[in-house]
Length: 371
Image 1 (cartoon, rainbow, N blue to C red):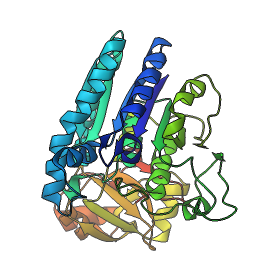
Image 2: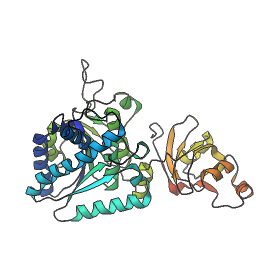
Image 3: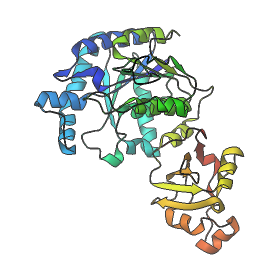
């Protein structure tokens, strides 16, 4: 089994620095998992928390201070993992990623190749993945490691994603409210499930329940189940890999896996461009498996080149999928709303009749969408 384990800031860090007791328990579990033949990728938060504690800072109020704290804390974080795992015979490797790394197809494949090689060693190296907070700007950041962990799970074709946090799982209402009940299993993410998610929780962390539900949507859409559980139950990961359901919330995945290229398309940001489709085009691509033709495009937003990943939305702005644009934004605006036979007259050339070919798109659940 390939297990991607995301560790939240509130689980690994305290105001005074990294939580040594938790890290000791985690190292013990990782050693047992590898001994049992499993492979683990850690997506870890905590660099900013460790760095600010080392420098005696409060919560960073500006980006430069946060990036500086991350630069200091990243070394502390890796030292902690290496010093705890080395005595167990496990080597560690650091990968710092940004959204741009996984949006770009070539860099995505390079990251996938690196991770695959690390996991192929005997014993496997434990990759330690974090967002590159010391240099990433807002437009290049995932902003939370919940989302990053879901994309990493797709990157390594994981069998399971586990998010360790400071709450037992998803509750049907705020857990502080009387009568709040833990939801043990989510067969499918619906608007009702989304409504149960709240905002950010601890003072140290950046992610809330909403980002965890979003991570679950990304992972399960790629065919990867996800479990959300409290960090104090880390030892029950040994139960999970033998088929037992640990205390927490399990998000089920549909049968079957997306191909790697489709997982990349689904995970790519796509924010460079947005194509607004009319109702007929939405029905054609979503219900009949057709390519997107220029005639079905109502409007084009953003700036992008031919071959870029763009989002496709219905007339109400709901994102229905991602696809590779066959034309840049300027040409796409010229041909939008026009039939295929008019393209050559409008542009002076024809690359293809399809604005986005059906083989170059991935569609999201019509009741869920993606942001």
